[in-house]
Image (cartoon, rainbow, N blue to C red):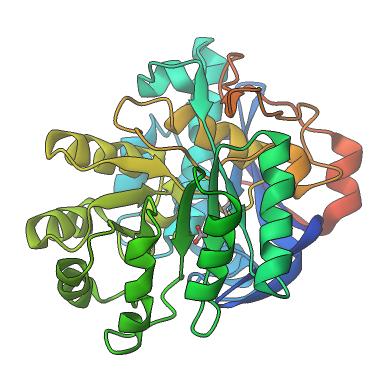
Length: 370
Ligand code: OSB
Ligand code: MG
């Protein structure tokens, strides 16, 4: 399709409660809403980079810069046939996966709207609802954490992930496990440990956890291999897997037993599908991670998680877990069986609440052909 123009909105949205991880605490989440205009249609995409470079080196600021100065000139006013064409155009831009993925999402949405097919159909997904869990940030104390987890369990979440960091790990997990002996429970360290300090986590092996997510540094697949050899609990890699090659390295090294797939981190839905396919062929279970997305990114995550290799519940929670007001007219709700329905309308299957977008916009820009 010939892309007429690209509009961007830098958003800042209040979370229903602050979210704290080993890399920081946020009460507001930022992102960039990407709108691609072609043939009278608009495709929406969400760049999941946040204000600060805590999870990734990318920020809303770097994403804006890369979009405006490097990606837009390669696609605006041009005919882009789809995800693969887009990826080959931006192949000369090193890294910056979160922003590339935001644009690819908008292309998929456009494509679906033109072909009258949902993103799930375009990706080849097989289910119409997806098993989900909730990711719970660090709380004031282990007791406060157990209480917060209890509220989510009451809401119907059957799988809970808790964030950990050095000094706030084994006791927190023990408290939750004692309160909920049969809950599907996992922990996420967001790279907060080293091989030396991670041995403090050995007691987690007795808590029947589904997995320990990303204990060590992003660029450290090798030490994850050493750690996995010492633990009976599965290690899951998130930050470390930024290309299908990294997934292959992790599999061949036995650095993990589970892979978290985020289209953002991998540079696009097409790359998420590639990692899914590779892992499925090698018998490596995967699940869909989250980045506190708005309704736009949430719709994308749900469609991706319908692929058959996603055999563990995703970090895709109901809209009310994140935002009192979202930017989509559609709000996602949790079914009693801890699933969320996948949109079936063309493309992402969501529409924008213009007034909400306006309320949360810090800056906007319209990029036209030079
Ligand atoms: O590591 O999975 C992560 C949120 C922001 C950045 C990184 C992560 C997370 C989450 C939240 O865990 C998952 C969600 O969107 O519910
Ligand atoms: Mg993670």
